[in-house]
Length: 588
Image (cartoon, rainbow, N blue to C red; front, side):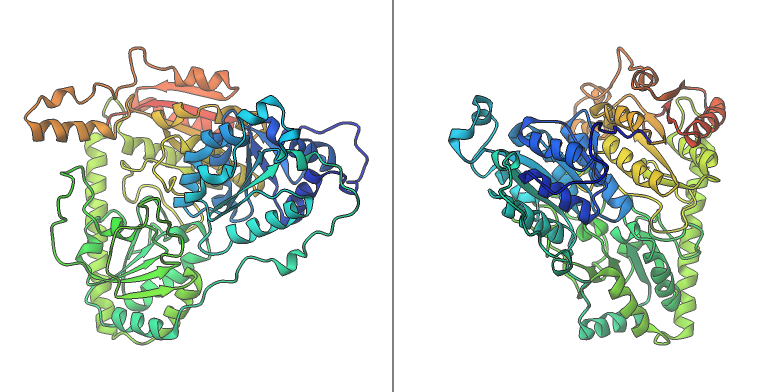
């Protein structure tokens, strides 16, 4: 990999001499391998400490071309690694740029340590620019969507604040934290040794265990259900979840669906009905395992009238196995939609699954297990038949059908040890990409923020590279163009990846919304493209990628040429390149 090695340093790390040196020593001890950032003078002391005290190693600086990219990179890395991830942003203006990415991390419950600079608190120490770029209680910008924030003003406080922030970020429910380090104290020479906190006494909280009475209630509901359905949510990031989910599903004959844009269960399993949007509503009991947006799981998804009531049968009995409402804040409406729960298992999802599997063992009648399992198999077959029929019907379409793009990308990478860091959210054909279970796909932004994808796919690919895998991403043109500079970071730091650009030349999500509004108002629907289409001129995304140093392939418009181009790009990525394939696709 590309490591920018500092010159003229002693062979071993010396004792800390300045306030920011303490922070770097703690980041090193806590296992923070990288510090993506866009440079700023408010953390120039920390920057120097990473390079000239820590030797630019654990953490290593990763230069990003925008603060939003830096935070999204850390977000993607945190989900892929399952461990410490940090980013650094410049005082007020950098934090303003990064704020949407921080919100994404909050709604996605990603453990992320965000460091910034502030002040100096002492007015006499401020340069003219410091007055413009600092504020009293700087964290007000993100306070409503971080778990905790602090602005320590002594070297000792720096140490305790960083340790506390790490502890809270990784305690359930996980989430981002923000620590703003006083610029003057960063650069302050230490008068003598500073005692650092004993990290063994400041570990993240252990997993929550479910209440036995609630486990019994959940087991009773599931054992007596006509059609039990299990839904896997953010447990899809942890490979340990799949064996537990599989045991539970097979024990009771449940049908299974992945939560939207997550994967926690083997694609080939006969109970996997992912793609059957009606199944959770048709069930009489739903076990939701670490599903962040429970109401969204059961809502009719569409672009209909605002305030229209969801039609259909009454809601099933909901068993919510998660950290519940512990992450809820009053400012954002995220997670606040009301939903009646029959049982709330307030617990770590894996410990809760273990308890449920034990409680259900031998409890459900064999005939009931087979009856519901047979319905799951039938519904799975129907889902796959529909997906295959649609794919066949559009296989030779020009522009290229998004489902074919997915199928051909899968064919190109299926024999590569890979991590899918990003994918289509709406046009993903059921059953085409064969997942083995959790830990193979990183999910979406959490907050629905366009521009998350480029940074997150690089962060995910970084974690994948470090464990010998290839990062693979399918990214939309609008998402990529908001933060295409992330490609430069990937090339510069030699983070190999395959990036397939699904270019429908539109911010297409809103085109159907415009159709709906026009139809409702009796106005021309054919004008829905205005203010949406990215064309005239069409953007040469392959040329843009090449300008960042990527191995660019495309633009591909002929569907018959797609397989060969994807194979060539995959070979480039396996050889260490950032390979980008630009594909013109149909709007779907």
